[in-house]
Amino acid sequence: MRIDIITLHPELLESPFSASILRRAIDKKLVEIVFHQLRNYSEDKHRRVDDTQFGGGAGMVMSVQPISKIIDLLKSERDYDDIIYMSPDGLQFNQGIANHLSTHGNIIILCGHYKGIDHRIREVYITKEISVGDFVLSGGELPAAILCDAVIRLLPGVLGDETSALTDSFQDGLLAPPVYTRPFEWRGISVPDVLVSGHAQKIEDWRHEQALKRTKDLRPDLLE
Image (cartoon, rainbow, N blue to C red; front, side, top):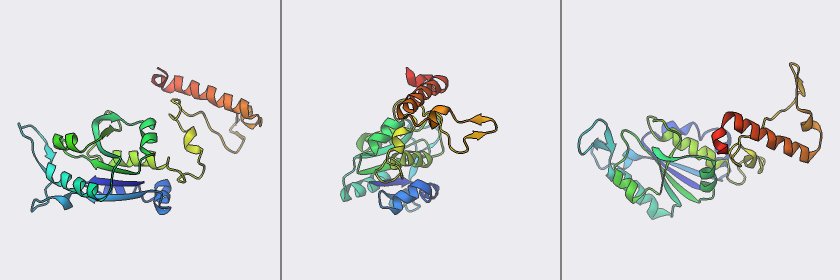
């Protein structure tokens, strides 16, 4: 998989991709991440990428010219399965979307700023608009990092245990059940006996019951 990220602040994205699972995935060449500084594609002598709104109003708008230039260039070099705009008014990101995107070959992610991008970019280029929540951030870089993390960990070979991602919260519409490790007893609290029973079906049934209970208690909306 290749992910091209168009951004005004590539430095905000360097840290998330320089450690842990994402770093290992890059080192193993399971994914290629390429940052594109949008200002490098501006034809303005001051490298401006924004302008005032038609019709007036507070806040600047990211211009058509540099965005179209970099997207056209990338599309001339390879095919892309999706061109994603990280936007607070986009489709709410969830595990199902992450699963779908993990099957793609190439993706472009556009990180917005200011009051957003000229709407014509959304009409001509963008195939998906994705939000990470009903709130507004300073830019699309952190949401882009979240999306990439959720998608890349699903790629074959990224996680040490190929089945690990399949038992994460939300994969089956439920929260994950409680998990335990050594020691068996800590401060008078013991691990549930069923988990050391060696009975695979009983363990599976217990985990499902606990997942249902936690979902009902913490996220009842998922059961609707």
